[in-house]
Length: 158
Image (cartoon, rainbow, N blue to C red; front, side, top):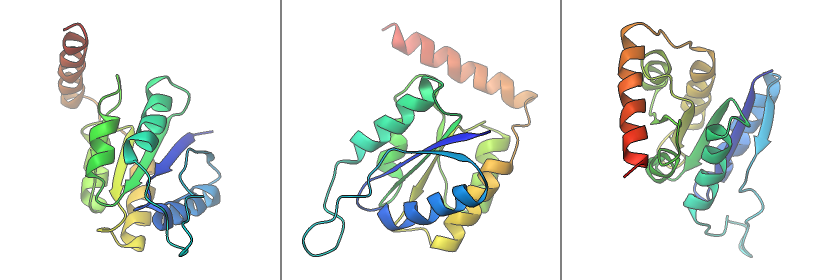
């Protein structure tokens, strides 16, 4: 069974809840790494730091504790930057079904980053479904991933 870690900051709480429901309906194992209980006194999510939650998910993917990760922040930019700091993580910031599909087919992305304030709920759920069901094509794309891996290894030794 596919195990998916999911995390968000205050800008992604609402969308993350919808994604968790989708993952559950697909019968996937979910590792919810927060945030969800960050409400302030006015009922809105209290501000939290996206690097904390992005790192939790990316660390789990990097360590092989989960198969894939999904991150949601206001724009998805910060989460994708954080996640790509971890060895073996290929986080893709996607905006629509096409970019979600290509991130899997050509880049074998293992983390999906979504902007909760810039992506509509239905578009985001469609992206997650497509991202999870699209296989990596391999072939010429594997050669490029191998180059990325080599760059990653050489930069870790600096």
